[in-house]
Image 1 (cartoon, helix red, strand yellow):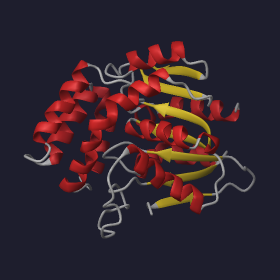
Image 2: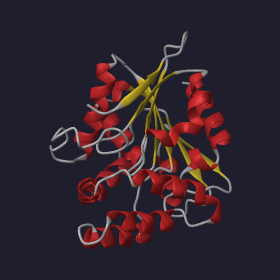
Image 3: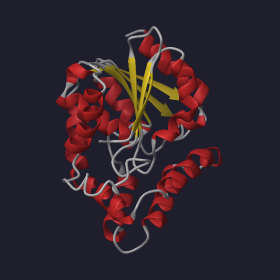
Image 4: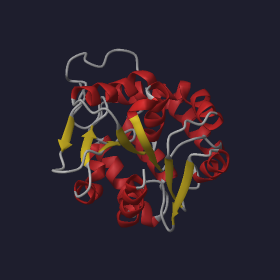
Amino acid sequence: MLNYTVYRHKNSTEWVTFVHGAGGSSSIWYKQLREFQKHFNILLLDLRGHGESKASIKDAFNKKYTFDAIANDILEVIDHENIQRSHFIGISLGTILIRQLAEMHPHRVQSMIMGGAIMKLNFRSQILMRVGIVFKSLIPYLWLYKFFAFIIMPNKNHKESRLLFIREAKKLYQKEFVRWFKLTAEINPLLRWFRQVELQIPTLYVMGGEDYMFLPSIEKVVQKHEYASLFVVPNCGHVVNVEQPALFNAETIRFISQQ
């Protein structure tokens, strides 16, 4: 089972589950924890191979890496804690996992908050993906990860989140990076389905105004999806919860409280 931490609220029955992105860990939510603890029960988890969910738990995660399987890892934790329904907050690739979980078990997902959401790979990200496919087993993964982080978070004001993700990625193994990167083979048809088919679950996209790779596609999705809304954080890149935590916290807590 994944490593996870629970913070219980004395009075609230509402749960919020945080799902980090590839190369991160539950520690990336440190700027959210204090504020969210005031209002909700909190579940923080480390995805397989990340943080304290190490693959050194011998062969625990040797099953095939698919979005279905990784979403079921999250569901296993929720079931273990007897959480019937939860609000979900994700960042980057974590938003894909939340949407996948909602596809499989919509009755377990009360609302979705998608930070730095990925709904379509533009030309630049397609090139990045192909570079990764060619070199994933040939050069140290951290070189690739640093390169990807700089392309996705290039500006000076993105430096804190860029360095945070690089620091967390150092905890991965090369083999684990390759396993996760192989997920890119199934990402395009999955994202196409997500864009075309809306779930009847309240969804808030929180995107940085400088998230040039992913914001344009989210703007188009929100125009088509009845249950979706968009909050754009000015002067902010891909990792909105780290770069602009006060705005992120206020807007997401307000959204959850309205559900």
